[in-house]
Image 1: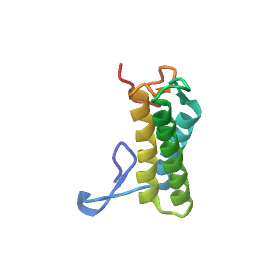
Image 2: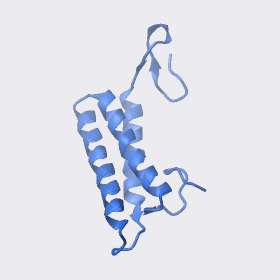
Image 3: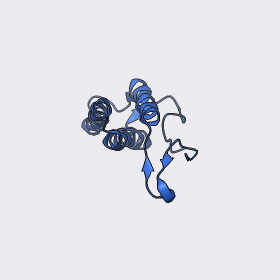
Image 4: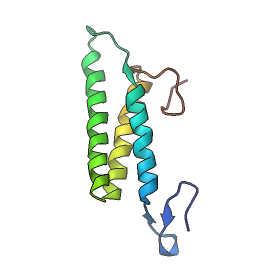
Length: 110
């Protein structure tokens, strides 16, 4: 039995089994978000380093997720891609990134 998110429920409803298609979908969504995000703070702003660090963390976690996925490690791939997207969403909500008002790929404040 699978729920609406595509996660297959384990026996007795305990735990969950990730399907490769679901993890791959999240990887694709985060890839699209990484292509869209632009640092919005000026070069000379004290927050520029913070923005660059957030973006680096997102890219690194996404890369890790891709590696785990290629190794068949769906649990760590799913965890890493969620961390990656979390860095993007946090940076967007803090105003470090410009995302063109895209509330499909990003969690916006308003």
